[in-house]
Image 1: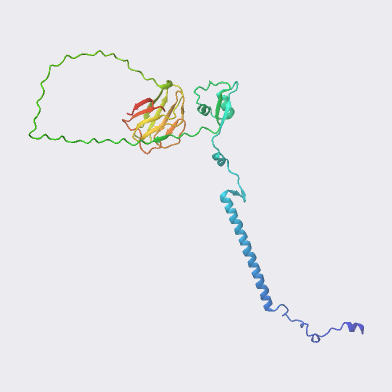
Image 2: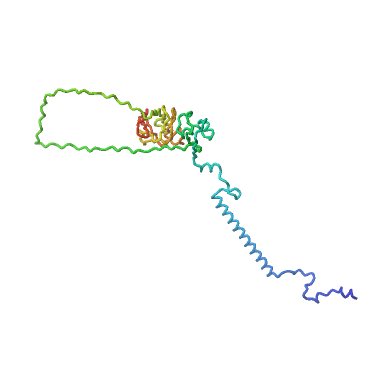
Length: 305
């Protein structure tokens, strides 16, 4: 009786709050279910928009930084060797000559060309230096020389007014020609001749305009200046005679026996070649070229054939 008492199952109809067995409509009401789904959709949308905005903000920051400095993987890249070298100016060092030094050993010590070392110090003899002499070491190379070409306006031709003579009136008396007087004896003065002064070039300078090739041809026109004397600085020297203007030499040193080629066309200047950057021939045939030093003293003259 006790077991049957505890094993008795109540009938469902006795408890109306329990759903009947086998029914499938267990769950939330449709209104609540739609509210939950809508809330989840709104939250997901807000999260997605936030992520997109953050991503775009980071991308714009990276783009701004990359415009100012190149980046690699988000990290600013270091400037290349070419960029660093382009920003460095030419460097000059002062070295005091020691016992046993030669220009060759000094050039090798500082890893500079012997030619640059001699040009920087205006030396003409590589075997002659003195102890305690201070030398400029062009570590960064020689500065680039830039010739200038100053255009000289042509001299205006002055027109002298010409006036017709006034006609004499018809009743005017024409004066008679005077009677020739007896000529006096002509006295021959004694003239003392002074020997012609021979002009000598200053300081033993012997720089000449040796030749000009391709005269009148813009692409080939080249003027050659040759130094047959001691080493000389051509700073402030001029070449005159061209209808285009006067050529002024830059600060350049011409060694003994050396020459400089001056091209009419445009190009890159160097210690041995200068370019005028003209658009037409500068020295046509028949031109008289005059080279003067910085004081206006005529050094050489050449007529273009």
